[in-house]
Length: 327
Ligand code: SF4
Ligand code: SF4
Image 1 (cartoon, rainbow, N blue to C red):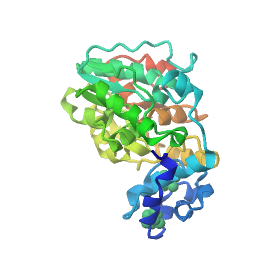
Image 2 (cartoon, protein in one colour; image 1 turned 45 degrees about the vertical axis):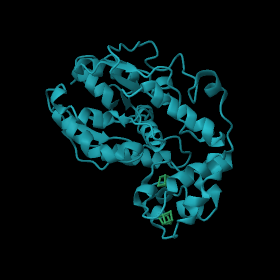
Image 3 (spheres, rainbow, N blue to C red; image 1 turned 135 degrees about the vertical axis):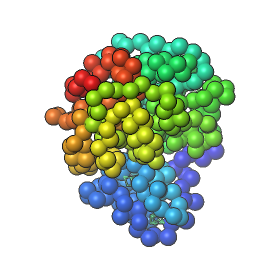
Image 4 (spheres, helix red, strand yellow; image 1 turned 30 degrees about the horizontal axis):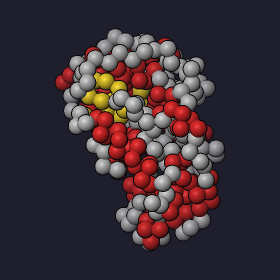
């Protein structure tokens, strides 16, 4: 069976070269990647694509983001990492990662939480907060046993289709019909694309607005679901409002991820969008790690941490680089 990078001709053939993807691309607008050129076959123009998906949301004909990810795979030709072979995660969990010493406390098996590699390996305090917050709600949740990477990272583009999809489907089988909740929008996107039923924490909480704890004091919040969960921005706004916070009304955007040349201007835009907020609330572990490393940046927390803190557990917030104010 073919690899991801061999599968893109179908998507490219449907392109009518209208240029809409280029117009909406935040990376292109800062001198980064050029999605139209990539669709024309100039794969090296993909560098600095942040995988935000704005191109695919705007395109009426095909799915340029899938082509961008495959183009990265072609030009980088990254083999599957030793970390994945050893651990099942796309990277090694760092022993000194903030919150690595916080042991999540799960209290049931009705809901399976799939943290994703970034939460597990880079900001494990988010996983702790998810266990604490969901326990506060009485959700009876556990961590999805033996979960692996969702297979989104570029390295998996060099893996055979059958093997890659096998990892994804196995996680669905492990959930075995129980509700599966993701802390990362990228995991949700790719697992749904391969037929595994799961959803992001945002719609899970939005279905339970009456069970959410309330925060006193009208905390001003900038809502940033992250690129892969941006369609949940309104639901996330409902959640923070139901918890007694005041959304500042910003348009959500991309944190810039690990991009070499556009990460800074994109993050500068996010910080400016959050200027009236006391804190940024994100729906993505990668965003959490990026916002929390901006020198002089606005305090930030993952939605799971807002939930845990509203139930009185602020332990995860103590792991941050940028102090989160009391609320
Ligand atoms: S990928 Fe879509 S938006 Fe971009 S040029 Fe092709 S048809 Fe237009
Ligand atoms: S995924 Fe985002 S950064 Fe990449 S080409 Fe599409 S719009 Fe641009």
